[in-house]
Image 1: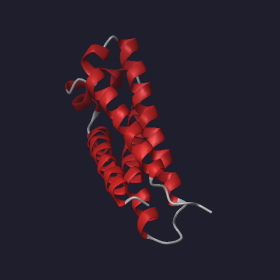
Image 2: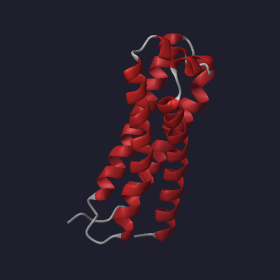
Image 3: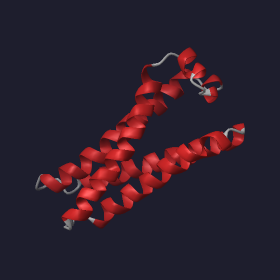
Image 4: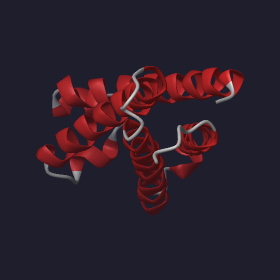
Length: 138
């Protein structure tokens, strides 16, 4: 395993995780009125349980994208955990694709495109780097 790429993969994964964790935590613990006041207009049209589900999936993805590869790198016998990291990175990238489509449909993409595409790109880079340094499973 190339340790430079492994450190780079963890650094990019940590950047992605911090962005999603912060967003997920805000959505998970804020009331609907606070989210609406913060500019989350899409919250108005969805059942609030779906908003909370999205929040917790973002939090779980943020944890998985960092801890799973770290466990695979450091603990012998946990090479399978890297698959959790791959799935977390994929899931977070998919979250940004769906978010971009939703913002396009609502006419908000001109305000959110930097965050949407930035986190999408960072998630895909994290996935690529994690795959480049993956530990052989067999």
